[in-house]
Amino acid sequence: MLESLVQAEVCDDECPIKKTATVLEGRWTTLVIRELLPGKKRFTEIQRALTGISPKVLTARLRLLERRRLLTRTVFATVPPTTEYELTPLGHRLEAVLDAMAEFGRQLPGDDE
Amino acid sequence: MLESLVQAEVCDDECPIKKTATVLEGRWTTLVIRELLPGKKRFTEIQRALTGISPKVLTARLRLLERRRLLTRTVFATVPPTTEYELTPLGHRLEAVLDAMAEFGRQLPGDDE
Image (tube, rainbow over all chains, first blue to last red; front, side, top):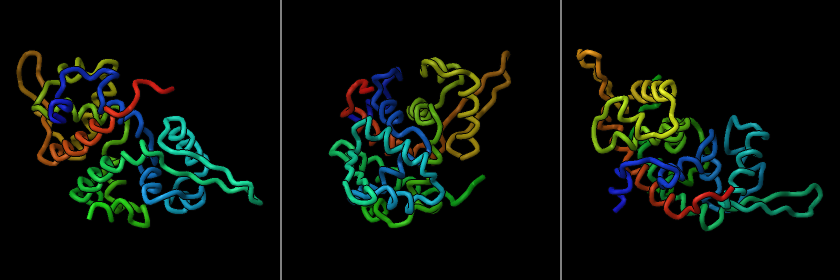
């Protein structure tokens, strides 16, 4: 069944692989989701886990994932305010994709360029 | 086992998900691989299947995937010359990732923005 999807003839906007590729597009997007799979996290926790990401890019990625309904953002009226991010049930369904990516990645050499 | 990989604490360059995300980075990359899963294809066949891709971008994606050893390029001395692209065994292992992406994509709405 999945086999037939992968090998369908035309790659139009209804192609499910294209839809997922669009959702995951952009550097860091997949890794932000990875950070949230175990449970909700605060902005600073995600930032600390993703060495090299700028606050600006992280904010942009989180907003985009929120718009795509893959995560929710909750602001708490603490001083200073804290913000928690949590995957939606839809976002959690990406775990299967990330599992497959992890399995493939373990077969790759460390750095081939 | 995979579970533990997904939830590993630090996301450094050795993180297998990050490695795969880097390989698949860039618009069209995943879809080029999708086109080659059923078997080798010529440049024009891939271009025809990916509505909207420019020859320049397709060339760039194919070269990058070749450098990463996910596909091979064979040039035939026909007039005019023809070029065939074929996934390597490593490239074919991405099928599991694309299968998972297809399954996730079928759960997405058509256009939510």
